[in-house]
Image 1 (cartoon, rainbow, N blue to C red):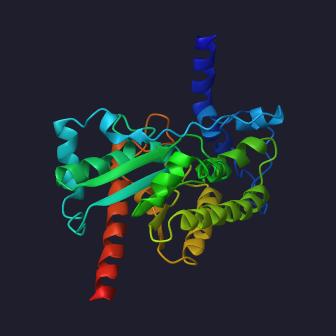
Image 2 (image 1 turned 90 degrees about the vertical axis):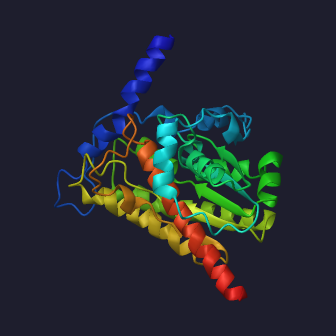
Length: 312
């Protein structure tokens, strides 16, 4: 049975690529061409809470934070590379601060072959290398969608951590897109992505409102999407359109709030000459996570410099 499950999961890794490879065969249509292939989406991307809900039960939330100090430490070689990438962008921290990272598998660090926690782990080790007393609590959970994250914000441990944070980092929404693929794989068009984007924006609004309710003073950073299929399907521009539209929705929403910023990442992965994806061809590898960490620190620095300028 375990072997069968493993085979199913491996096959699932190729499903989305198969689906996307047959998108838009007929470019005379206004949207994506209907697909009549039956396939399944990678099981990791969608939580099984829907199955539980259909039985009238609610799956218990497992909201234990991922403590960075308990993860496998970087090797000397990897730490050296991290210092080369991130050196000089942490000098803006003038006091002890607390950071909370919440969201999906990108926050958890899935795909990081060093098992060191992805971009959050890189941030943590960078602060350690610079002898900065900055605590990071990681509440990333693979498969999380925006509706599930909204529920998790009611968890006492997460709510307490956020209420005490100076900075909140979020990655959320990729699994919302994957849910559309999963629910419409026999009839894929642009319309369900557009409809879901509106609903995603509503849930994201509720998430930001809840974060502001828990902590009005924390600066929140929403980390944008990248297109993991760009290298394999660069000619399918509609994929870029979907990613761009969802990113734009998130960016416009953050502009409605004070102390909320959007951190773009799509450009980091577009047309890169280096392999930035893990073996599953979906999540970033350690090199991709380092680019995300660097971008996040750059935005943290800009925000802090702006704050200091206003107070002087």
